[in-house]
Length: 101
Image (tube, rainbow, N blue to C red; front, side, top):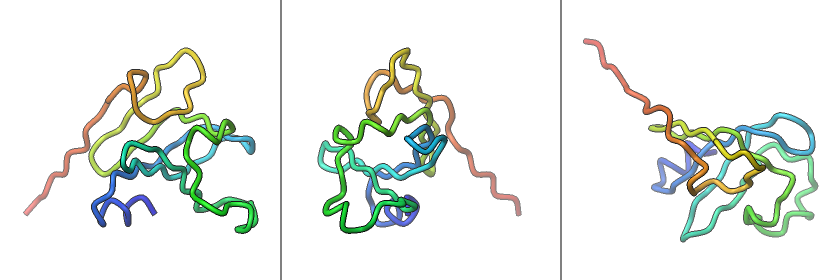
């Protein structure tokens, strides 16, 4: 899902961290200054999510890492940080593609 959104020109990332069910992966969309959780594998019935929830509404998601096609970030916050932008995120890696002929 993240790759499809990136290809369409959106700032999407795969997040890795904890939710109520344990360690998990989900997609985050950064759009017009807001952060949205896009859950491709939720066990919630579709009728329970009548909208794509903004991050501040979902306290059960606690991201530790996030990545897109180019970068990998680590959450260095000593407290539980639910957000996907800001000073607690450290850029730790940039992906480099090597083409061999």
